[in-house]
Image (cartoon, rainbow, N blue to C red; front, side, top):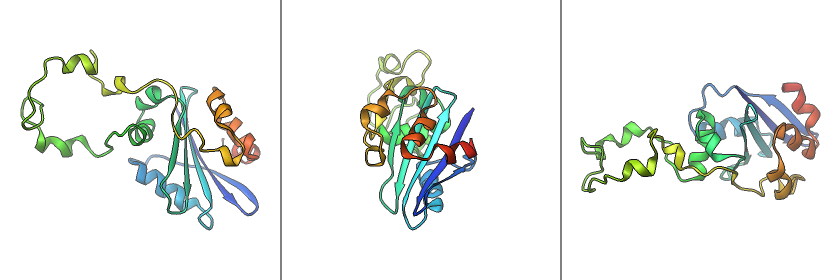
Length: 179
């Protein structure tokens, strides 16, 4: 089960709103959702958490590229919303893999690429590319530094991480209203 919320910085402090991720399929969708919640292009944080398995923070400010932090890339990569974040961080392609079928031969290799009998060993027995994703945190570890949460504090977070982040930002009460 997921929990997702937006925290938008305003002149009066932080405003929180829960958010539905049903229509989010790409990082662009998630970024647009955050920008829509922005007041005067101020900071918007998108929090996503999956039952204490992992959490992610997306930070959007105006038209700048989003900044992302994920607490456990391997765990996040096994979930649909976490995969959106980890693909961006690890250089994955969030396009539909079916779009790349034109470049594949019938045996699954790219045109002109020799067959590699050891390729299955690299991916693992289950055939999941997610097994190649590193366990542990990935992304911008300074994502919340200027808002009052150091890299060391961010990396030390475990359960109830989003509430602890909100507390450091002075937004715990507003986050609790949507939790």
